[in-house]
Image (cartoon, rainbow, N blue to C red; front, top):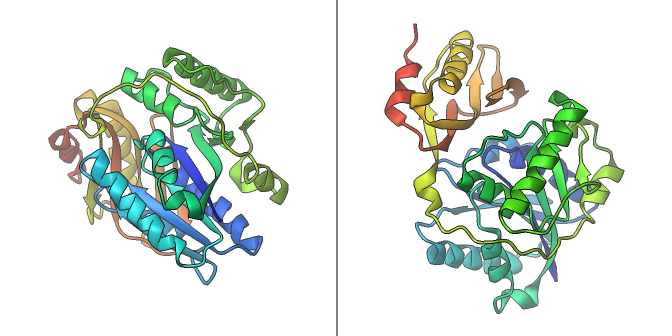
Length: 311
């Protein structure tokens, strides 16, 4: 049977970046791997982050978002049936940051998928400096996407102090409690800088499994609350782009912005941008497209657009 691993995490938590480390480790073990992307936004830019690991032993497929639960389940089921016939040893699913994890388990237990696939690991990515003034809907998603995880992996841990990471884990446990879940995290949290992960670290993640945990369902239309806005080929000079990012986080009229990410050029090459309210990083990347993605709740496109004008 083909093992399926699920990498969950809230919008902008760093799932795709972790996927690079995890999928590369899988390939190094001699497995044929397929990454199944289920992107929430209208433009899937994750292939740009994953391009250096794709090859003979690592492929990538994607599912476009469905307008309702039934449509989305049907598309994922169809894609998994197709992948089962292609000889992969592992399928790693990276869903959107507003994915219903229960939906994944429902699909995997359906015929004929239950004869072809077995559940492997649920790995939850959480920002080490997780914002702790979340709306009830955001706190629910944080809890629901971690409740079944065999391990929580903290992103951006190199930017956080031990006290900040402790606070994040405490807040995660509080969100679980507030949503009627008995699950609590402690030793099953990986706090290491991803650039320093060893094969032993990744082996532990690859053996973490999943947990059975229940929580109280919150019923709301996630697409009405959360959104990703895409700004393509704006070509702002890098200093101005940095200013715009800071302005957007500071301007309440833009909505509740959680993360700004994407790709830009400094004239000498491509850079990957990843910004939160308290930090911004720019890292070189081989190939990309000029695109900036603003992720958050109740976003106001007109207010955000007003900041893109070059001054």
